Length: 123
Length: 138
Image (cartoon, rainbow over all chains, first blue to last red; front, side):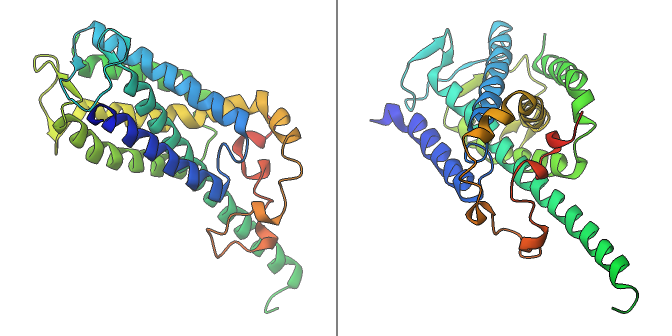
């Protein structure tokens, strides 16, 4: 069972992000196809970066007992793909939330300015 | 090649490729996203390395650690904060219409997130593409 500790933790974390996504309709609950493609492109790009790091001997898989041992490529554990998905999904949700908030406050400011112009001074 | 060199190379290429889209996005949300990811990296990278999930060749890294995270690892956080918003923006030009066809009936008042008390219904652009930078005609 301990072999599934890391993968399990990653899946629980992804599930937590999905709850946030659903609650505020940020990514998959706003535009599912676009969200899936964004995460997919991100994961593939990061995997390529990992493979470059592995090929250059910069890092390697540790001897942790917390991994399944399933490998996507030599020294590249299955868990890495889920980790990278978590990284990309976190980035997407955080940015979508911050950007939406910024857009709203811009719109609110524009609305206030507009009503002041209509209502005249001291309205 | 050392990890620092590889990371700088990747970030330089990524930023160069993304720049035409990146420069049109709001700067503050991008910076806030990078900050969140840097803090998450600080905590979770430290834990992942302590747990022995992966190891570094000490000759290939600078040896500068922020808590338990090699400073080079923050390149992943920065790359995600640059690349993911740009990917979302670019991909929206291709996928938005198809996604919207499937969610016409979802976009009721329930779709409006209630995170910001300052944003009343009047200022709420229906929590949809109007809040999206990609909605600007290119």
